[in-house]
Image (cartoon, rainbow, N blue to C red; front, top):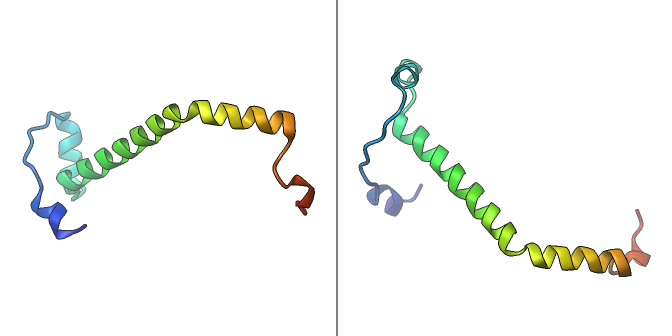
Length: 79
């Protein structure tokens, strides 16, 4: 993690189930870091989903072209 990201941290209030918080504390987990990791994963997944949705027309057109014309350079494949 870069120094710029550390200094740009924000304080937030979150509402989480009490039993879950207590168990995490008992296990010695850093709640801020765990929440950050989960949020990073959710952001990455949403970016990927949106990218795929934005580019779906290209995927469909490419797949249709491969379906009708075959793979480019397929004659040179050795598998």
